[in-house]
Image 1: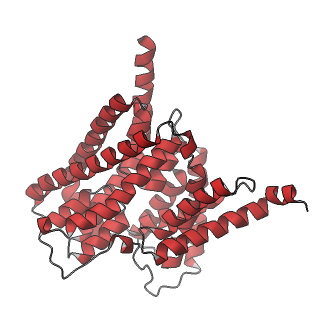
Image 2: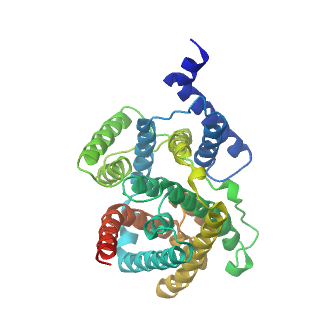
Length: 369
């Protein structure tokens, strides 16, 4: 096999990409950087795709979809009766806070779009405080959105949240003493093993989640490989079907599956003004953190929750990261989880059709002008 044929061989291209992803995850994990197996694999695959262009790194979409199914299953396990009780008790406030946060995002995105000339649809999608994988998947499915800018804005926000929220929580502003300490790099998914046997019940969940995800994709549901497993697992779990929690290694693997795929989507060379995009990301991220902090004060006045619980409930970060910080500061984990889960579901179920309606309206308005 000659050099060119070797570089074009799918198995070789995939193996090189896989090795880059694993090395990235290990390096980020050793350095205690946030979400190491997603961000590490994403960044190393991205760098490798630029350094080894003759090899053309390869990461099939079905592997990313497998990672999404694992994440959806894990999210579904978070639905418990106590979580539903919390959601029912504070449902009106959850709706209000979610709408206010999204309205704040829309206003900030509008101002940024006006100031920079970046299309509003792209800035708005990049500013939505959902999970990284969910929003990127949503952006892929929506026409007219610059996926590179959206990914850059979402990753920048995620990094700022993971670093800034622990600093805020453990600052004198919140009155948290030094008895607890959480380093941003240590914010990771909690251990998910409690001794339950994984098989054979896990095979049943795997088949159900996969089949429902494929069907959901056929009927054009948003982010089907995440949403369908989440709903199926949650419904079965709440109905009393025993669902085993996954080992941390499986969660890490799912992050690598998703991160490697995203790494190949990053195309910064298509960014016309890199300095401007860095500035936009900083403004967008800091604005979201400031908006969440302001809304947390209102939430605290409405329900009397602690400052840390209120901020972590509304912080536009990942549910697992915010839950771990809540545990470290003795916050109310069920409230934090409920708000984070509600916002995830709200964004997954309602934001895609609402965005499509908004973008169609904007196109008609421009056409009339």
